[in-house]
Image 1 (cartoon, helix red, strand yellow):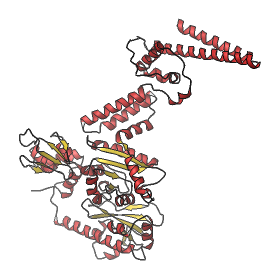
Image 2: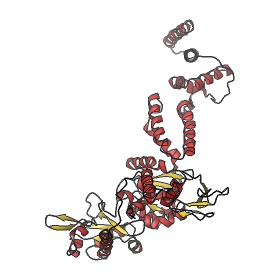
Image 3: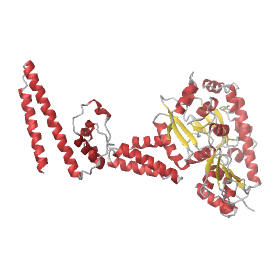
Image 4: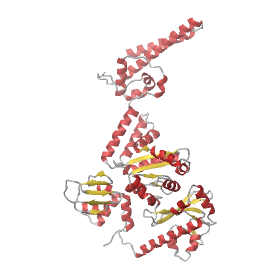
Length: 540
């Protein structure tokens, strides 16, 4: 029977968590490392159906059904292989490839690919410790890399000449070019990586599939990566994931940093659960790959503008993947530094531990994004903020979790956007004296008409009102009456302030004989003007 290319079925398994697939049909509860529910394949009251997200399989201890996402959909929906693949592809948002068996030619091409890139890594590793690679070795050692670290991560040096093209001069050009190590030029093939510090890129199974080369002469870009090939896709590959896999399971979290040197230093300094994207922005595929291992993620980015933007983008990407057992946070390194620089300090590990421990939870970080990017003091700004927040929360697939997030943000919006709050800047201003009746009236107006509190906030801030006061009687004031009440009170307090100024000036004149007559006449005129306004307000 014809079947899909193994690459596509593997991609489905990488993109879709078995929890995501099974939980669409079976209610699951987390217990220990697994999820449990009642088996959909036989009648039972006590859950014996287990789902292991890390390993990607389900198993029923009652009827012995066992399998992965593909076999689950086939069994549950009574579908054949093709129909199940079609449904899963749609769920994953992936285009469906043409069904075909992997030909012998494809198998040979893959073996050739792995053979060439594996041999290239050994050549680069040898060259790093030769006279040609001396400056590369000095650079990487200066970055705090020991020889054991260099060996573990297979770091090497690509010399200035065409060492790979020359070695494989008798190999078919198409096979060589397919690895991304060489390119076709006017006079034959030439090496893509020259005078570069070379970092092998491993797939999730630990096979070398590509390289990332760092410039050593100060030229830009600092890093260049193997172009996408049949067996390597930057958008679906995380640097260091093959080394981090077990550590992610043990630590019950993953840390995502910006670059490969940061990832290596983190892994070698007690944070083995760290990975990094490859010179490209974080993608949904990267998040899906991590979430298959663990849904607890800490994004650790530089604290500069670029780092903040990258974190905001990561926040949007991770929303569809969060569950009620997720713990997603955002950590930032300030002062223009990165994890590599922090870890090379004398107490670097402790500093890094503190940065990670102080990470901001997703619920708070999203709130920061909203209040930083939208002018929530204005109705229009709040409207845009509301639309953005809804757009982000609509990405959450767990309806109960989405409801909880909405409830949380409704409370925050009420407390911070709509409910009048005291301005800390007015703390040093003398609080005007008002009786309980006036206080209760103001509380009633502010709670009923928040827009009035915004309009007259500078004045209302001075009263230190307790907005949680229980005003039981309905004063029956409409918007216009409420606004008139506050304007009247404002005029009254202004007149009281003017009269106090007049008394102070009178005492001053009597005490030291200074000429205060002109200033007192000015105050009298202002008092008279304000009382005329009061009369107009009463008679309106």
